[in-house]
Image (cartoon, rainbow, N blue to C red; front, side):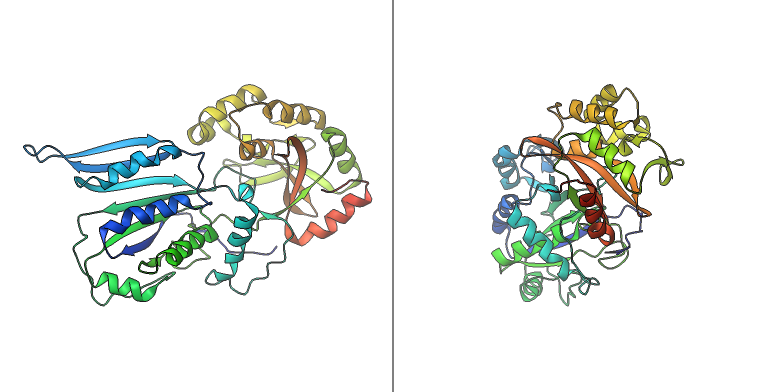
Amino acid sequence: MFTYWKGYEIDGSSTTYNIVIPQRELMVEVLQYIMSLKIIDRNENINISYAETGDNLSKNVVRKDNIYKFEEWGKILEIIRNPSILDFHINIYCVHPDKLFPQIRKEIYSLSRTRPGAENKAYSYKKPTISPFYYAPNFEIWIDVSFHDHKKTVEDYKPEGLMFNEKALVDNLRNKHLTIKLGCGPGFIYEYAAFIMSKIAERFPEVGIDGGIDCAGGFIDGCTYSCNLYDFERITLTTENLAQTIIQIFEKLEIKPMRRVGKYGWEHEECSTLVLYNLFDVDRWQNEYIGEKAKIIKNISGGKQEYTPEEYEQFVKKISEVELFNSIDFTYYCTCCVKIKDELCALTCIKEEGRIWLEFRAISEIREEFEKELISCGISIR
């Protein structure tokens, strides 16, 4: 199987980029520009934590935490413009790769060739996508700014990692400056980080940027960028009769349903029915990470994980009616693991253009041959 990166480090490390600006007044403009990027998810809330000095008599430092909707960004700007603010931390989220606008998606994928250590990889993919297994990919970025040290200067600085506007970076550090720290990972996407940094550098040539090295000391072996844009390729079927099509494919082709086994579900074994992959051990960890959505899915499934094709179709239709679930949630909960040509792949459903589509997600090496087999069975591919 083609390996884009190893990504086996599991120490939970995050990675930081240093965005060094020549004066504090530019900070708001840079932050506003980041929030304007099409890669930022406008449907997610923004969390801010900040410290400010108290009244003139006590001189106490007060720490506050707030959550705002994206359209309330102006309220956050009011906070960080306040001269009494000592530091602040903001959490924002990026759009899932499957929901990117076509032009932005094309630009994001083009950055794969800039990844240090992976520049010479072959990218002959038709419809690449990330894995639908697990809810783990982390599309969150965080921004830290501290005003404590903005008057300090740094001599003989040696930039490392990804570098943008290197001369401006060194010049800014030698004078009074302010550093915006932008962090990501673990489970982030390299191309997302490269996109954000390159856009900032292009828009603000007076701003210098470096950083981004992962927990393994590079850009391909650590956990920081362990979400792979090329895990699978999408094969979308045109059928509207989910159960009948699944039965037809399973009868005519070498496809085996798989279930998760072992303490953490990291192992797999063949079984005779479809198994909802992401409902494994739902009581132990999904409530913690997914909250209210997990409770709803548990009520719908009744704790049932194994389904016949007919039962699977009914389950899919039920969760498609839940307003709380977006299209990514829907695909996540519909995902089953199947073995195709001795490779673990996914059978799932997507919601697009006002309807439900049955979809396989297969590794690139078997995609072309598998598509031909589907067509030979009378299955139409979108």
